[in-house]
Amino acid sequence: MVLSGGSGTRLWPLSTPDVPKQFRALIADRSLFSLTLERLAGLPCLAPAIVVTGDKHVGLVQAELESASIEIGTILVEPVGRNTAPAALAAAMISDPDDLLVIVPSDHLIRDVDGFLHAMSIALGVADDGGIVTLGIAPTRPETGFGYIEMGEGEGSAYRVVSFKEKPGRADALEMIEDGRHLWNSGMFIGRASQILAEAGELCPRVLDGVRAVLPASDGGVVRLGDGFGSMEAISFDYAIMEKTAHARVVPMDVGWSDVGSYQSLLDVSELDDSGNHISGNVTHSGLTNSYVSADSRPVVVAGLDGVVVVETADAVLVVPLDRAQDVKELQARIDGE
Image (cartoon, rainbow, N blue to C red):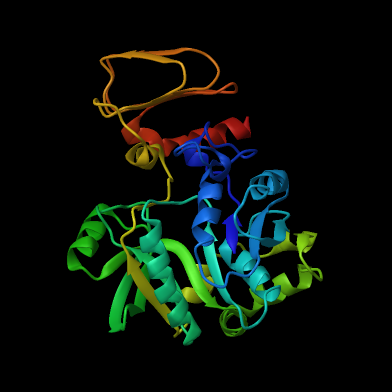
């Protein structure tokens, strides 16, 4: 199951509500959506995939799937986003009850695909034995923008989950990466469809009933969830199920993962020149260091700056210090409110 909702507002104006970041060729002239499908094609015994997306993105999904290397069974269309739990439960309902459901975002980057497939093979084995599994990322810095997973007792190559911790302060983040017991939460989950639904019936029955009420009969193709979906609680799979189930397990992996969730993370995974810059488009620069500059439709000139983001598109221009790039989401919201 490939999650392809959201608008990636922290990467505005490269990412917009009409064409969010997963459909942009941000890395190596390939979209993150395309790279996600390519990774999944390496999994064994892969059933036709389920893609969950918004109504305005169906055409983008279909265009990407024309050249995909995996078979798509269903495009589930949400009338409005309600976070990951309702989407995952809808996918579980239209799956074979015995299928192992692999839930992955479409807007993340993984450099080490072989390492990812190895970790996924472990997770599939744990899920086959009754676990509901998440993949945890070995942390490399005291990141305050990610959730964390605390590992408990080991069970082979997996660990029991002790707790989930949302976006900590810097002091707590530093303590967590130093204790060796915490991983970043990747937002990827694996579990048998029937078990996910059974756990939802115990742990979040109102969400389960709400999804069941708006899910039409499906034999593949484009399936649109009913309008009542919009009145449901917006809740993550983490909070609805993973934080409450006794079957939560985590498999650590170190695979060059990035959620590409900010201009800093985009710069971190981009090709850089000798001055630490990523430059694309018609850009002329002098004395520029450690910066991300992109020109889409006209010439851009930058001189004498360090650590900045300059993004020009046909619709907008963004100029912001790199260490203030997290402000982009709020600024973009102001534009939409005008």
